[in-house]
Amino acid sequence: MPDRTTNDTLAVIRRRRSVRSYTAIQITDEELDTIVEAGRYAPSAGGQAWHFTVVQNKKLLAELNAAAKAVAKHAGGLMAALATNETYDCLHGAPTLIVVSGDEQSPSPQVDCAAATENMLIAAESLGLGACWLFFITLAFGSPRAAELRQALEIPEGYRPYAAAVFGHQSGDAADASSRKANIVSYIR
Image 1 (cartoon, rainbow, N blue to C red):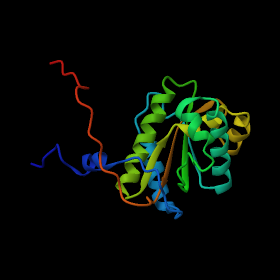
Image 2: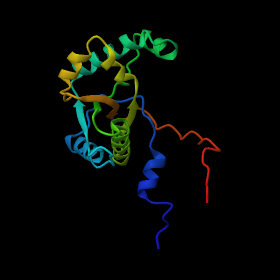
Image 3: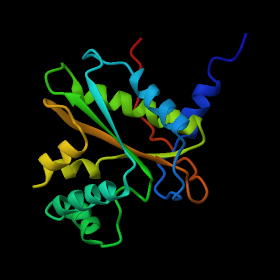
Image 4: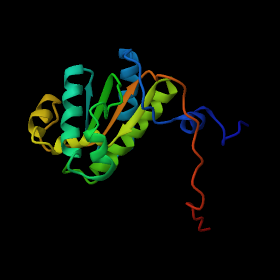
């Protein structure tokens, strides 16, 4: 009988890291379709009430970065420091962004979108691609350009962007796993 504590899926989960440096090489359509399909197969409490927006248009990616940085400048702390750094790219130079929006009328759109995003991150790792979950870019939807950006991204009425991730080919070596925090599990038996 195979060892159930060590298999390909668990190895991919343990190997996955947030990649923050990408080459300019675009992922293939086949890779993109595989990643999006993984997102579509995530569990949901809201009847799969999500919408995926794939952005590979360089001009629109730059506009989203600028809009997010404009909002972050007023956030204070690290966010403001990053936003005022002219060379900071909240998309980390990745050629593909996927924004995951959820139906605000569903029971748990934020959780549903998070599950879909995690599935896509794991799928990217399984394909040998780099990926990074992004919070910073969602700030763009609190900018004065929010309505314009929502329209450009074809986000349906009644849906809100809850999650986003970038995908591409990693530039450089993969980072080692940081140690896992201790004492975060309680077993009640």
